[in-house]
Length: 388
Image (cartoon, rainbow, N blue to C red):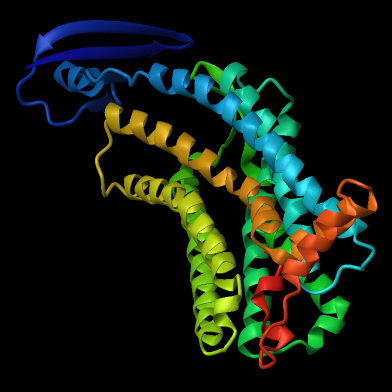
């Protein structure tokens, strides 16, 4: 085994370094200092150095090429559909001449959250091609806005589900007359979302990414606690943004379906279609993203081995599944317009007021939607008039 002997001899302000090559077979200490001579000797194992540095760095060109081609057109598509659809929801609710109450307040806030979320997408599309070309403070602002509305968009779905659960299962309609209840609940949701985003605002910054050879807006945690922060935020994200909402929605809608099945008017209602559309859309859009995040957690905990192929595939999967999750912002307006009868009637009322539909279509539509229902069916349990 070959060792290198590096000797540093200091005499006053002058330091002389000697490098000698020799064979040492019984050296136990790599560092040795002689107090009497003032010599510092460091023994360096060249075989260890070779093993340490022999691995070549991963090639991130496939991921970069995929992001440059996939993200800009897909994010712009989500931006246009999500912005147009949710602006339509807000316009219909505000132009309906009826003050917002009940679930409409949650739907209004959900549309605002979706709009603010999709507004950030052009910035990320630009980053995919040119890197983060904006200011560092804008990185914190745009990243935090995206995260706040990411949480808000999901938590308001829970509020809508819980309100329908109380209205149909327990026939609790008294608090619908109390507008402050819904306003305070919406404000509480925004406050919770803001608090959940504090770590993002603290640690988001524009940094040069050597592996991508570009500046990126990323979370930059302190080195000594980086892994802890990464794992904690992934777990928080999975619990708050997926597991808890999914469990809440399944619980609420399972009891709603059971209640509707016991009613005589169940077959006349569109309730099941509304419920299945909401739950299936949420599940299909967000499950792939959280599966990728779960795999990332296992890698952070060193429960799975990482190699270049794994890392490349995981980055591409994260890009695809994140985009699919953002697409959920475009589906909510579609559910309102094509599934929720209450919202569709409001939309037609606004269009009629502006002369966009004629009287014959109006009469034909409302004659079909106002057919007499079973007298035993309470309006409070009419889920077909729920706006989702």
